[in-house]
Image (cartoon, rainbow, N blue to C red; front, side, top):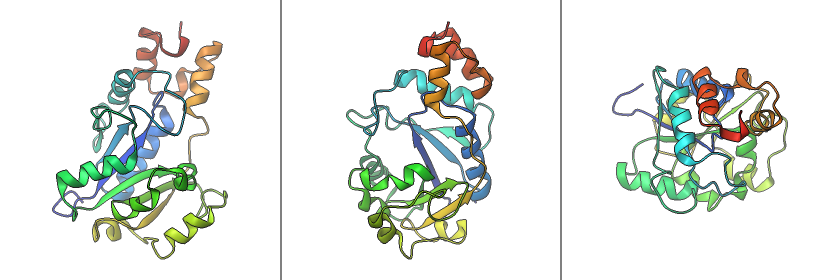
Amino acid sequence: MRGPRALRVLYGGTFDPVHLGHVAVARAARDALDATVALMPAADPPHRAPPGAGAADRAAMLALAIEGEPGLEVDRRELERDGRSWTVDTLHALRAAIGGDAPVALLVGADSFAALPTWKSWEALFGLAHFVVAGRGGLAGDGEPLPPALLAAIAGRAAASPDELRSAPAGRVLYLRQPLFPHSASEVRARIAAGLPWEALVPPPVAAYIRRHRLYGAA
């Protein structure tokens, strides 16, 4: 529903590089939520080593991956801000721009959600946005037990439908069950560096970009 109570969905990540799994998750969320999904590359991700490709290249690959896809777009706000890409800072800036009443959701994988207590000011995030958790399984994150602090924080927050996300600005957790891509961005990078087949793991325009710019050691 893209109207007065339209849900803003942010799908953050390093996207180093964007692969078919990222695009599949974004499409599934777009269709399930009837909402535009903005893929938001992190400039300086705090929870991992520096990306293998620069921010400009990762954003360009994202744009190529979703070109012509209705309801998917690239959000460059973290690339335009100095310093680490803390989600809480991004959401505070977004709220300053759009106000506190518009419904906003963060789309995350089950593994990222399970690691939420390691994020900066993580408990404050529930006052700034909903969470949409993409995974194969149920509430425990694809069989991975959730930390006790997170279980306590999400008690009573489960949403039964996307309409519940539109009815409030933040604070609910919706679980999307879907088949997930078996490969990771780190595997794509490793396969490129090792000279193994990798092109089938990314959208064709992204494969062409990686080769043209010799990213990740591509010949």
